[in-house]
Amino acid sequence: MQEQLLAGYARADITPEGSVHMQGGDWRNRISTGVLDPLYATCIALTVGDETVLLYTTDLKLVTKNFSEVSRDVISKATGIPRNRIFLTATHTHSSVAIRYPWEGVEEYRALFNEAAAKAALEALADRAPAKILAGVAETEGLNFVRHYRTNAGGVCGSNFGDHSSGYVCHVKEADKQMQVLKLCREEKKDILMVSFPCHGTFKEGGTLISADYIGPARAYAEANSHCHFALFQAACGDQTPGSRIPGLAIKDYEEHGSKVARYALDAQLAPLEAGAMKLCSINFTGPTNMKNMEKLPDARRVLEVAATYGNRSQELKDALKRYGLNSRHEANWLTIRDRIGKAVTIELQVLSIGELSFVLAPYEMFGEQGKYIKANTPFPMTFLIGCHDGGYNYIASKEAFDYDCYESQCCFFARGTAEMLADIYIDLLNRVK
Image (cartoon, rainbow, N blue to C red):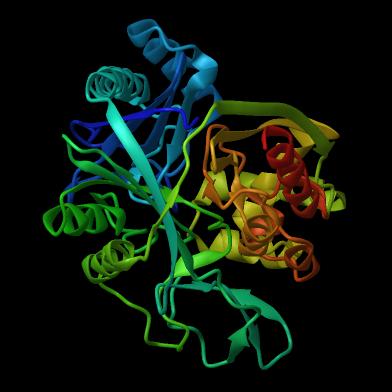
């Protein structure tokens, strides 16, 4: 007998009041000067029998562990939902609030967020109604590309945009173009449209206006052109950036990109999935720390001293990086971080299933090929990928990314091979809940 699924939806405004340090790029010097479009905490309440989960997608770049620990306590106290049934994820906009760092006003913003998130949870629970699940995929074109590309010199470079240098040859691999679409159909209330797509929110990175990035226009377009609430979740976006694959022809307008995302979602062909018992499987994974280039640690500390003295964009810093053989201030910073955390890192891996539907909740920026692998090997008709989940562990780069020593591998907590190992663990967890 098919179990009844109840689904509810609500969102609350989490736009900061006044000027804040912005996450994405140089957070120390990037101070907001206004709001381009609002930020939201969107909550979807799902209930089967006595089991309820609260699934959030929030217009933040990431959700760090210390941030979510407090938030989940506040939400749990307000709703009575156990904290291990509350899932906080980020849409990964690079024009939101720098919650990770102790800038002035961060505690006040966290309090604003927690109040809004609890309000959204209560409203989503009150909004629950019987729902049927429809699911499908859309093969997109021109919405994303792998931001690593080969050069005439034989190396690999990176860019968040499509306007590559004249030395561009080709992208190292194809992006994951597949968009996953879930529709929770409710007879008496608006349907809930959930989209999982791997694409960084980097259109407005570097600007000083608060923005949900393309996620904002996608939400607005979908809701204006359907009888649906809309929620976008990041998939395996670690190496995936918005734009085209043709140098110089990246989509520059975030509104155009967002509307295209929404149109693909609205046009997707969907088929019914059976609801069923709700199951959650969670394990702690401990893996070796990325020790690549740790011999440069003393030089990294010297570089950071120069950056602190002269600034992140100074000629002195550029000279120091060249002198000590480091690629960037980011590489120097992450060498010191990995030295502090020691030889191993532990993260929580979670999967959730509801009948024929399952969710992978990844607390990091998964690379596209690992996302493809999970979707190809899942035992479920639909496994909805959610990256940038609770944890804020940045990129876990693929083996190939370590080989060409890209930005993502330099910032990775874990050793080479961990990304592939985690993908296999997720498949094992999915088989357990199946």
